[in-house]
Image (cartoon, rainbow, N blue to C red; front, side):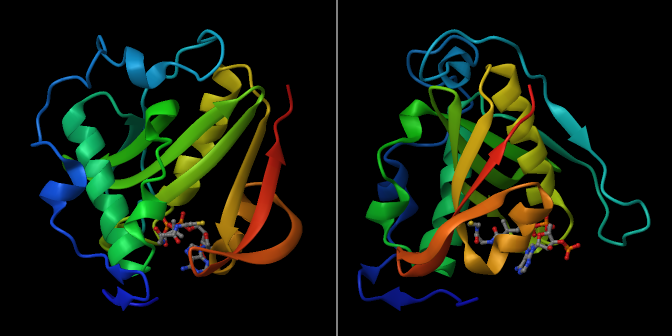
Length: 208
Ligand SMILES: CC(C)(COP(=O)(O)OP(=O)(O)OC[C@H]1O[C@@H](n2cnc3c(N)ncnc32)[C@H](O)[C@@H]1OP(=O)(O)O)[C@@H](O)C(=O)NCCC(=O)NCCS
């Protein structure tokens, strides 16, 4: 995968201060009590509550360590997730910042994987009726190939069920297609280019 690069869309390496607009803090996000804002589905009431999930990767792996997947509850966690997305999508993959920050973050439930107090992965779920639009799955370079993304997909399934939805859809980068296939996703339609990267639409139906 390409390292930090300048793309036809301009240099993505803008100051993070400008990207985030605010200083890091551990306070709840604006207008929210506890994690009420982030646990709010886009449509309808919360049908169930998902507690954080602790995952221990293979104990035989030298890279093994505990990570925890949970919903974002504070501004500091949200900012850490946005920094990770910026580093992975804009800096590493050359996605224009305007496409990475598409204005849908306020309508989404955000998950993070935390290890040793650091956010090492994130993803986003947008609920539309009984469907979840899954996106922005990013794992820190130093944390890859340890099953964190696969674990995030399992938690996304739990979130989907907990809110009474039963279908997940996403645009997979074709190089990572097997990640989603192993998680039960099926490709739909032809490959296409989005943000200068080859993608394929995939979906997964959950059994009730
Ligand atoms: C793609 C990405 C999310 C995978 O995260 P990860 O935590 O390393 O993935 P996992 O360890 O859970 O991998 C599970 C399986 O997915 C597949 N997979 C993961 N990374 C892959 C890669 N770079 N190339 C091909 N297959 C890959 C493998 O089948 C893997 O199983 P294996 O390790 O036993 O071979 C991570 O590499 C990443 O953040 N990439 C940059 C951003 C990105 O592309 N996001 C996805 C957008 S669709």
